[in-house]
Length: 92
Image (cartoon, rainbow, N blue to C red):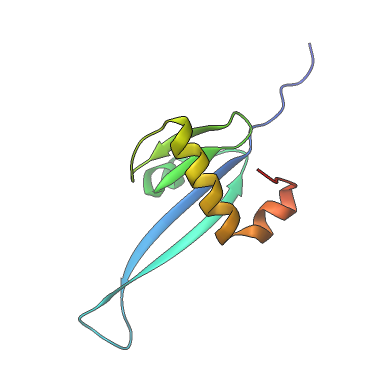
C-alpha cells in the first residue's frame, strides 16, 4: 500500500499585547506557520487552520468553514504571506 501524502496546513495565530509606546493601547501580532502536523497548543491558540492539501478550513474563529471562507482565507494568505507559499510551491 502506498504511503499517504502528508497534509499541508497553514496556521494563522493572532496575539494581543499592550503597546510599548502607548500603555493604554493594544497591538495585534499575526503569525503564519506552514506545518504538516498541528500540535495541541498550536491548535488551541490558532485563529484559523487551513488544510491546503484537502482544500478545507479545519478551524476558523472568525467565521464559517465553507468553500467561500476557504477561498477568502487563501486569497488573504497569498496576498499577505507570499514568501511562505512560494517556499512550498502553492499558487492557489
